[in-house]
Image (cartoon, rainbow, N blue to C red; front, side, top):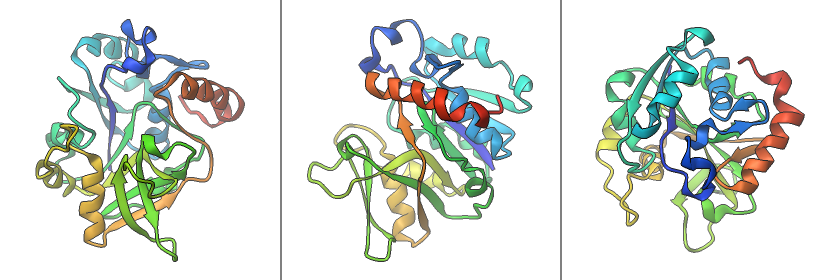
Length: 241
């Protein structure tokens, strides 16, 4: 299993804070934000981690994280010149992934749950995680059938489909590389990761697990504040870095 942290983008919604550094390097209580997704991967035993970053912030990441030796892992860095969708991460990371399974987590996603077992026990196909939210319009959402099995996944649908958001943690086998290459850009001009979910879903190879604890996508000032509180009150004794 290899790990990817997607940590590019310009985070204009968090200006002026992100005028001087990357969103994923902003402090969440007593650690940079990126330490939280790093904890998720490292606790799952992943030793090879690719960090995808914007070119103008590359020096900041290298200064903070270095080679990964400090954390007992090895970091590889790749530049995403322009954000073209989450699924592009698997194209950028093609040589890094090779023929291994891969777990990608977004650099601004913070989970209360320890998902180590879910990651370690993955064999093949695809696996994503869903959480009931109050603002599903911000996310890709998954609709479950009467038996609790995923039957539809849509990216920020205009009409309500479900209150269950697909969180920013995705596990796939190596076939995700070719699947990503074949995704056509959406109306937003992005290679949508929802198309990858559906690629596996249509094959009957996608598992959708539900997240029990808190999950925060720290992309707004309100969610950034929520992340600070979560980190202080519930995460300190769960972190290993």
